[in-house]
Length: 233
Image (cartoon, rainbow, N blue to C red):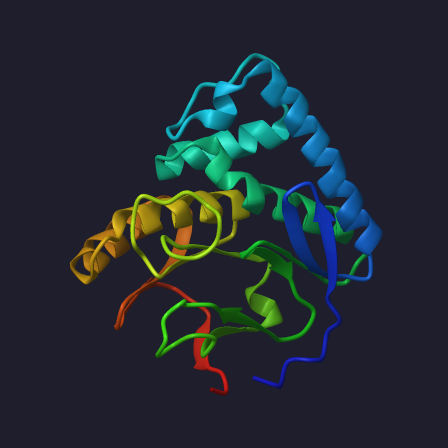
């Protein structure tokens, strides 16, 4: 595989979301994030349980498409719909840029990534462990995209987790589903002995392509994942 080309990433912050964006249709990405966030907030005002529940929930009549997408992903993964929000937003923003004519779009919404690449790209994996910190990455060819790579952790970041997984990374074609499944995978792993069962359970979710779990000195892999490489220490 040829070397990834050099890309320029820009940051966009909206409310609590901080996104890294590589796309020549930056305004389309940012505009879609603002638009979808407004639509979702209007729905949450009518349906506050949608935001607070940690389990799948029924939708109100005439729920917007963003809420339907999140609820669908949550049902498949067995989590609350807000576990899918970052991935859902990333995908919709990237798709808006592609529809506007961008040859590629990479949207990283706090570790939940949706990308359509025109050239090879390397996606770093922050494991949070001393031995592996910032040393693992996926090398992805453009033919493998569009693709979602979403991560959760019981030790890093601000997301709620009931586990102690150092890193749960899910690969799928749908980013809302990958995001929700990453949350559930991280919930499942409390010790290294939980890794194998968690891999099997998450890979059993329809639509999940691959799973990577890191707990202490254990790395578990299942399904079809992009090429895993080591970056420079």
